[in-house]
Image (cartoon, rainbow, N blue to C red; front, side):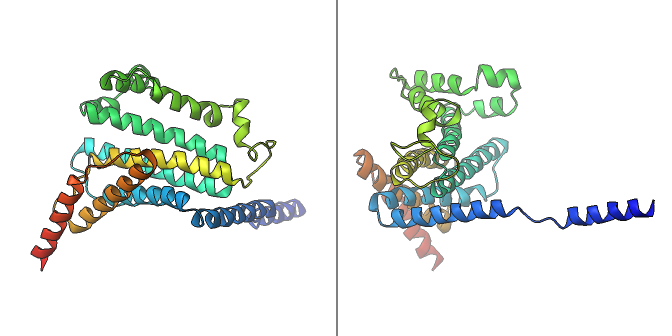
Length: 276
């Protein structure tokens, strides 16, 4: 009996002394090397830097405003949804930099779902409470992704079905197991492979899509967050608006209405003068 107890005790000590397997450290090292290579390429490409700057600006904006006290339960619901978008954006960018392009795109589908859901709430704020208190059946019949897209298309009078096409792209190439999805598991025009890899063409494509979703996430979040007379809040709002405006002008040829930005700059200047 004594020997059996000793063997058991030794086995338990060995169990408690285990370390993370070397293979996982090796994998992490490989991911970090891909990240370093990705960052180098991004910093040498003005267009990629434009997209990454927009992504970071939106993340900074959300991070600032979700940390402020909520006004009521509906506002807290919006804060939680924008927290989810922040987490998704961070995860998607991180996966893209480390060479997991399919996973990055898969996470982007979740951003799109939340963007569409918040777009519904902007049009009909009463639906926030309905969504929060809904059971599974209601979520499937009213708030399922397809139902939300149909609501938005009908509300906006859109008949082209662009929202559905974009959503299906993320489903077929990333979120669902499909033959087409294997194209994101290997270098462009190459064979799918196991584990992360580096491909500048795929990285750029994924980051461009992420920037577009981040711009929408920032615009939707901006609908709900007031700056008041807080100079820091106004500066954070101004940065998001200016970076987004320049990005839209450069990549979508959409001249921005600078009146809101100019009014915000005047408010910031007035607040600064009053502080002095």
